[in-house]
Image (tube, rainbow, N blue to C red; front, side, top):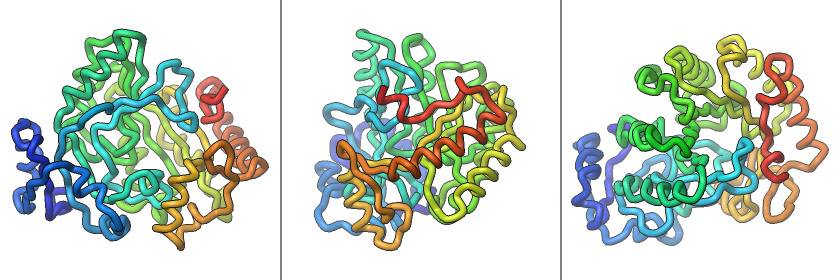
Length: 334
């Protein structure tokens, strides 16, 4: 990470935040460029997202306005009535072919909002009204950026004395140390997104290998952290049944079913608007060029294929785990 950013753009309003100077210390060789507003760089017209991802810049900014949003219908709420996600970082350090962020954002650069406390205050206002199930790593991979931001540890400290708050931290990273600090924290759910090994190699550039993710989950469990597995999104490819059957076998060679909180499953689905942009940027990416069905503004596999894929994976998982441990994205629509 220390060699990744050659240019760091800094909003004038972010310059005096202590977190800004702490982040800058990680990149002593980067050129710092002052800007008025992060959108002046992030929202520029006619950007080449693929080129930027190969040579990212970092933007340090102050979040203005809303930063906590209700979860989308195609995201899983795990039976929680008050499901939200928070955006303290925009864009991910990995380069997954099918990632919806490539359709959501006009830029491949990464934005870190340094006023984390103000985002947390927004969560407090929600907690005054009802409990909150909050996903803090949807628009990025916070664990992958933890050495730079420390945001996972900050969110954990924030949640420690707020009994109505549960946090999910989703990741494709492979941290092997530091898990003892999360021992016994049932309010913190560390969720590893897992894909078949050849999928990870082909489509999840920069992310940890399947073996490394499972090793990281093993370390977290051994330290007493709460672990969820996300086999989501399932991607159709020739040979997908063998790939996902092997994935399930590899999971339970490394982890015991009793050690896992739950498992989410779901086939690929995405906003039609996001998919349109992703197709323009990735004309040779089979995962996004598939002839999807569009329904209520979202694209997904045709119903027979969708049901075949998700039912196949569910049956494989039921060999190892209880039915109540498996969540699918459609349950959030009921």
